[in-house]
Amino acid sequence: MNDTEEKLTLKDIEEARERIKDNCINTKLIYSSEFSKECGNEVYIKPENLQLTGAFKLRGALNKVAKLSKEKREKGLITASAGNHAQGVAYAASKFGVKATIVMPKLTPLIKVQATKNYGAEVVLEGEVYDEAFEEAKKLEQKYGYTFVHPFNDLDVMAGQGTIALEILEEIKDTYAIIVPIGGGGIISGIAVAAKAINKAIKIIGVQAEGANSMKLSFDNGKLTFSDRVDTIADGAAVRKPGDKTFDIISNYVDEIVTVKDEELMEAVYVLVEKHKLVAEATGVMSLAALKKLKFTGKKVVSIVSGGNIDIITMASLLNYGLVSRGRMFCFSVKLRDTPGQLLKISKILADTGANIIKLDHNQFKAIDRLKDVLLEVTLETNGHEHIDEIVRLLNKDGYNIERVY
Image (cartoon, rainbow, N blue to C red; front, side, top):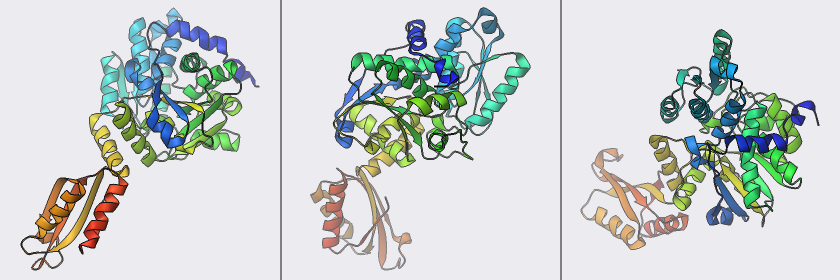
């Protein structure tokens, strides 16, 4: 054990819980039969998307601001964040009557920018990713003497996030594994220290997006490793430079780090909405997307859904992808002879299979030989991949050679 990790203890996390308990929610676990079935374990969701401000980040921010001296509060706060930490700091600042300035990447979803402003914070948009926003925030810190509230590389912030583990293990003492998302590493550091102090045998498994995997690279290499670039829909975890303090803790307490593809995140968002009526952002479902990668079965597993701050347009795009990936929506094109009755024949086959037609595009001008043929494009609501296979089989049987669009 080195000096860095010695500084974060179970006592720190227990004290943080007392400090923040009146201003945040104990988000109760939700059993998921669907995710349990998909991975062969007994899966419980820790819904931090239902937390005040819509994400776990509030916990760390509250603990940090609560511990600041009167002098530091009077000078004001500054931080950099892709959104959820921003709202946490803004909320905490409003509770203590402190001025807060938040630097956010220019590509931050508008819902997060507006929500941060709604808590009374001043927002500065700078940079394409978190790291560039961070550099600007550090400049403003030096210029105005603000107190910087780091989103992850801060022991007080980690202690606040670690209160999640206390709640989990109060509900399910024999939890086998906790699956935790990683951006810079704050939440998993706090959770790992608390959980391992209570039960050394518990497994702590981190999850990163494939396109933003700097902590996994660091973990595998045994030293801090930065990514040249990040490319993922998990904007809240798009960190090129992980924290040195979080890396020290993760190196000693975390058992494994896995990565997930953007496509897996989109599917997890869809399943969470359909089966649990819970809304989460792509970063928020990283732990659910990772469940299929677990190397064990038959165990009690808790997946932390870390945040739910997502705008409607982005949500619509994610759900559409989920519909296709789960076989709930199917689009194909087929070339027909431009003679009466062709459309009726296709419609009857589809009706006989129980498919629901969402859209038809009967376009003579898309056909190669538009004097004789017409190209029909059909979008269907379906009941899964087996249903789609049956539709294709019946169309082929009647001589229709279709092309799948999606």
